[in-house]
Amino acid sequence: MTIAELKQKDIIVYECLSGSHAYGLATPASDVDIKGVFVLPRNDYYGLNYIDQVSDETNDIIYYELKRFVELLSRSNPNILELLYSPEDCIRVMHPLFEQLRSQNFLSKQCKDSFGGYAMTQVRKAKGLNKKILNPVEKERKGMLDFCYVAYEQGSIPVKEYLSLKGLRQEDCGLARIPHMHEVFGLYHGDDDFKGITRKENANDVTLSSIPKGLQPTAIMSFNKSGYSSYCKEYKEYWEWVEKRNDNRYHNTIQHGKNYDAKNMMHTFRLLNMCEEIGRYGELKVKREDREYLLKIKKGEFQYDDLLQIANEKITEIDTVYQDSDLPDKPDLDELNKILVKIRKDFLKTY
View 1: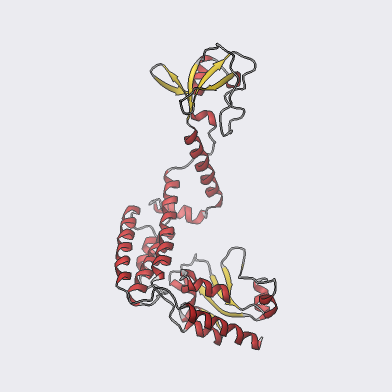
View 2: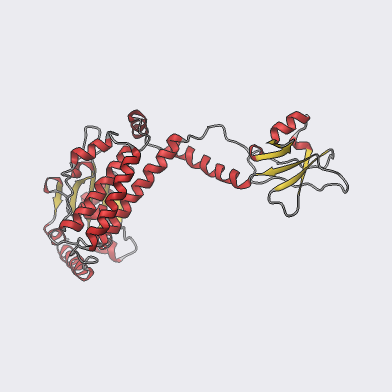
C-alpha cells in the first residue's frame, strides 16, 4: 500500500507536521517531515495483507497503522508520544475518533528509559562521528603483510622491510608455527614448494607451508592478527560511513570546527530536557521553550567535552526527578486496548 492509496481510500485518521517544525526548531534548510496514523480496511486487517507502516523512500513521511501506533505508544516510544501530543498548529488531519487517544495522558516513568535511552543513542552517534573525524582511515587499504613483523637485531621491523633488505619475495617464503607462541612463526626461504607468507594481500590469515626436516628459519615473524581484524572492521565501517553520510551535515560539522555532529547533540539535549519535564511536570512539551539554547548547540557554540559533562549531569538529575515522580510506572494498557478496539470498531462501521 502506498501513501497515495491511503489518501485515496480515506483511511488516515491523524496527520501532522513532525520533527523540527513540531519542535519549533525549523530553519530555512529544514526538511518537512509528516507523520500520521491510518486504520486498515476490514479485509486487509483480517486477511493476509496487514501492513503496520507506510512511508516514502526517504522516511520523511510515515504513517502507522492504528494497532502499530498503540503498540509503540504502550512502550512510551518518544517519536510516537511526540506525534500524539503534537502542537495544535501542526495538526493537519484529526478524525473525531482519534481524539479519544489524544485526550488521554499516557505518560509514565517508562519515559525515563525510552527518552533517556534514545538520548544516549544520540550521544554515542556524536562520539562515533567525533572518532571518525579525528581518526580518518586512509583510502588505500592496508594488507595483512602490514601487520607482520620480524625480529631484527635488538628490536623488530615490518616484514616488508625485512624482505626488501634481504632481497626476498614473500611468494618464495614459507611459514611454520612455533609451538606455544601465539601467532609467532618461523620464516623460511629456499624451497620451490613454499606457499608464501600469504596467497593474497587481503587474506584473513597467513599461509602455512610444509618445511623440509632440518631446514633452519631465516627469521622469526609475528602476525598481529587481532590488530589486523580490528583494522579491517574499522576500514569497512569508516568508508561505508563516508559513502552514506549526509554531506551537508558533515561539512557543517567541519565548518564549526568542534568535531561532533551538532544536530545529533541538539536532539540529545532536546530529549533529555523533555525527559526531565515529563518526570517533573507530567506533561510532554513538544514545542520547545528552550529553542535558543538548542539552536546554539546546533550551531556548534559549545565544546564537545563540555556538552558530554552537562549531559551526564542531566542524566543524574533525571534519576532523582523520576524517583520522586507521581507518574505511573507504565501506561494503562487496559485503557489503551479499550480505546484501540473502540476506534477500530467505530471507524469500520462507517467505512
